Image (cartoon, rainbow, N blue to C red; front, side, top):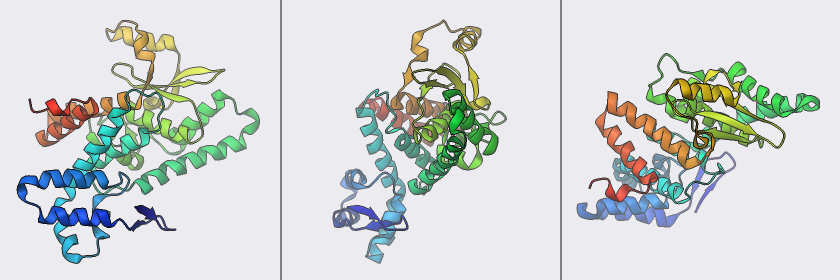
Length: 301
């Protein structure tokens, strides 16, 4: 099993995984891809492959295994995406953080979930601090205001209007550093920070412009993280849809599931790579979208 020491570092104690690396090294080329797939299923999604390899005791095995980092990582992401796909359209977001981290790791194989999680925890800590300071007046409206204050005013997370189609806008790990995103990635940031404090935030899968809905027993509003967290009523959303040629539909205002959100993020990136390249990434992300749609067996047909 994998455990973590007091500093949060990986404590590698899984001999079965070490054996799997040995099998990969000595297997024939004909079955190597199957060995990589089986090995990938044994690895935790939170830990970069290279960190696991560096924990192997045998230096020759470490050296040889480094050749497969990219292939193992891709198969690991494929496996965990397939698990998310099997959960279907659950309206909770228990696996949203995992899903967007997996997507982010496709932009950088070396990223660490511990670092990713700590950045989100730090934002939530600051928000909770403001909640305590304003406890006497802490209505739903005030909570939303404070959330936007932390993310937009204090931290400077904004919509990347100048380079809207930059792929990094869709990788949440990079967004946390650049502080630039698109509507859906900024909405996910709001959700993940808000979840840590129990805020009832949900994705709204509007055409052309993803947004948020805040829905408590006593209060409901729409939020646009791309434009500083401004609050919007439903009539404004309907006028936006009408102006862009869309008829009113309740489907647009339903709570978007983790699967809906991550599939839209993949579609955004596929369209970017289709237009600007490279084709290899377009094909890879298209295949992973097929996994999310449970269509991967038909990808090459």
